[in-house]
View 1 (cartoon, rainbow, N blue to C red):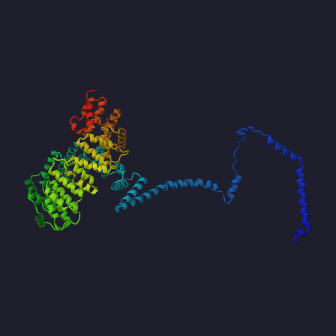
View 2: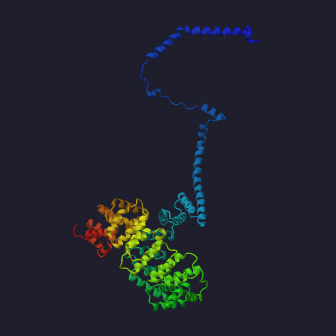
View 3: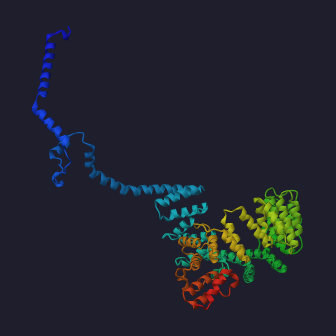
Length: 640
């Protein structure tokens, strides 16, 4: 039966409706509540904004601390809030974490550095220089100051030619645990990069190194020999003094011989040949080396060469080089045919018909000035299997150096197929220049250079020293500069040529087209350009900026200091130039005439006229540029 048909259900519904009706009637006719409601509405309509009459300190209430009962309740619960957990664990976790970091981080660094060093060693042994460099650099950043890591970093950076190589080499040289070899690596790399003044300045400041050591002496001689003016004489004096105390030093002895025999100074050449004659009289390996060098000198008389050759052969165990040198001395001006040469050599040596042996024989014959015999070997039915064109070009150079134009012409004719059109034209030009030196062939060589490609330019470059035409040399360098506008090194070379030829107008124009870089990269070339531009008063601000950066990077460089002083003098800041050179005025003037002019002008403008006259290089006017001569006249003038 449905609930809707029961009496109790409807009775319940009726009672509930009656009750709700009574409540509604009570709320409607309750005047007390209605009066309060109307008063509230009236206040809402007529209220105005009033400032609070309570002060802040009256309204502020002290925070309520957690009661002990609540704390006890929290500790009794199983699930505590996360902030409470962190607050409870913080006094334990923070010290433990700090202790772990304090102990564990150095251990992790050691492990990481050990793994990097192990990887770097393995990569270096496998000739993987890039990996060895990157791992060594990471290890150096992780633990800076490790001498072994620095050595490996320097070694790989030198191989990869990294721009920061000199910075790391200097850091290794100044390391407390650096060995003598580590210290000498800095001047050695300076010399390799052409920064000889830095090497000289650094070696002069080192008191801990043994100046009497062979390596130190060799580096000093090598750096000074590349100086202009009196550099060769300084190197000769140092090498001769060392050999007087250590006559058995083969390295310094070989350097002395190379220096003297390659010098254009008659005094040094005479000293070198005299030293060689004395050494050749012995019966040891030194006598063998000295005899070989003497036999290669065209200035030695034929009769003397014969006696030297006999002595060399009697030393025993002759090499192929000794045999050809002795044959050349024995035959003198007579020619040696290739068949006869191989017949004589075949009595002492085997495997003469191998390509490598033929190549060695041809090179030796070219050195002693017998290109006609080399040509006969090249004309054999079985020519050299590889590098035949290069071998012929070397023989052509030897024939032209010996003045054998017939052999040179025949080599050009025989090599006709392997030579380009430009190479043929250039060789014809060389023959014309040698046969008619008084005539000018400017139009011809301009056309030759303009049509040459990169391969032709390489061939021309190998013969460029055989021409006496300076116009051709300058035209060749100008063509290289035109094709490589982004290569500043060619501009530096061109400026050097114009300076040595005394073409001041062309030098000034070239310097105007050469911009000073914003950073130091090609130190020697940029330093020379800074000197020259400051001498002519060009771009003084850029020159001074470059010199300041270079002096910060290379504080030992005396030349950079003088270049910056010249910039200051040109800009009218004589006080700054004087302060920069003040330490140099306490010692003897330098050998370089340009540096002496700069120091003399700085002294003159500061009022030290007597010392300025002492510094002025009055005896070296021929070595100075026109602007430097003007500065010299200022230093020597009587005006205050």
